[in-house]
Length: 72
Picture: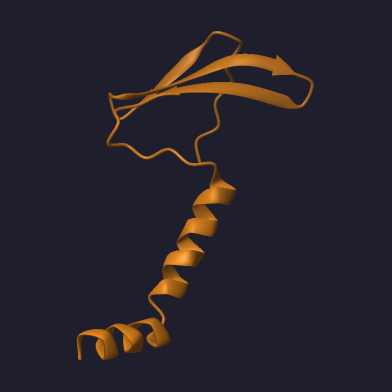
């Protein structure tokens, strides 16, 4: 993991096309802005984990059996 210090208004660039800017700092909370191409998905980590778990559940053997029966 790369750890960087940034002040309000400062930014960093990822992969030449994603910019992350520190917008505001209040106590322990930091507000960031993300500028990225539309094709680059950006998720909060807790939502990303939930999506991954849902995808795994959807690909369970029960779901695959249901598809086999549907298209049987």
